[in-house]
Length: 193
Image (tube, rainbow, N blue to C red; front, side):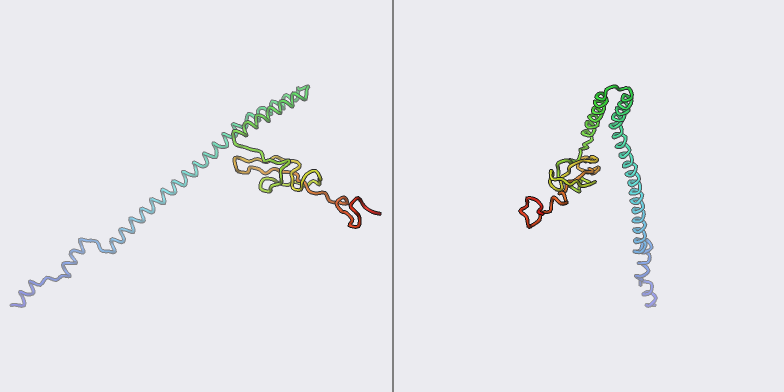
């Protein structure tokens, strides 16, 4: 009978831990819950980023559109003045009046260019710089040092510090030909016969 009472008093630790385990989630369940939570958070972040990207794209397009509109508002008065000048040329009897009108339009453009921080690239009399000049041709001359710009074909412009369009120029080069060759047997005064 002693064995039976011992059996009744024995508590199996495995049974008690199984009951506690049923109340508490296992490590696997915890890991799955954490995975699901992280997945939902990642999906929210991805959706937020996608919305941000779409909103940014719309804002950039709107800024570009407004910039173009603002620039055109500045330029349209020049076009209006050119149209008036073209209309006046048909009735003009004096060339000086037309010339003065065109100069007024150019001054209007210069005012707008200054407001927009548009500056001309320096050319004639300066040294050729491939960063802001395009050489259209070379001209042989003794009057200018080689590499000096002697003529501007098309003006170039900077918008702020950024090159908007390079200037197309004519660049000096030393003359070639009979005048540059000196016979070593002479004193340099001219050719000998």
